[in-house]
Length: 208
Image (cartoon, rainbow, N blue to C red; front, top):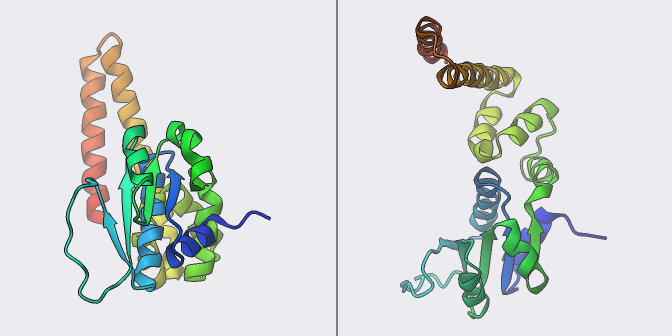
């Protein structure tokens, strides 16, 4: 039976396995996995280094804590170099490299992030609120800020759903503006749409 990805990450961090690869799918989903890694490392008192340079020198940790390197790269050559080091590494990359290297690494497919996010919220924060979980699924890069808000005031969290609706409303306005710009421009309609967006954001700021 396949182990849950969050447990896979936790076990990787706790043990001395050498390399873990994550297909991050998008920057937003990648942010979720980075935050998961940081949270687990924090609880286990392990240093995590967001590393961009394999040759970068670091001073040794005064308390001799375990260290894990975190890379975000789409370079096949760099992934090969990383895999040949003696360090414990986590690599976030694109699907192309994930397919190429996943058999050589402990690997996680970010396309399963919704299941991972649900598991993480329930097991690590004991949150079972479906409305909240669904919101976080649509905004995975905001998970920890949203968890903090939810913990402070879970009963009134429905207000966050309204924030999402407001963002979507502004997005719809911008789509209309774009359509007007690429079509035969009606200056009056375009002006009114721009004015509507500015006013809506101004009043939205005063409310929230």
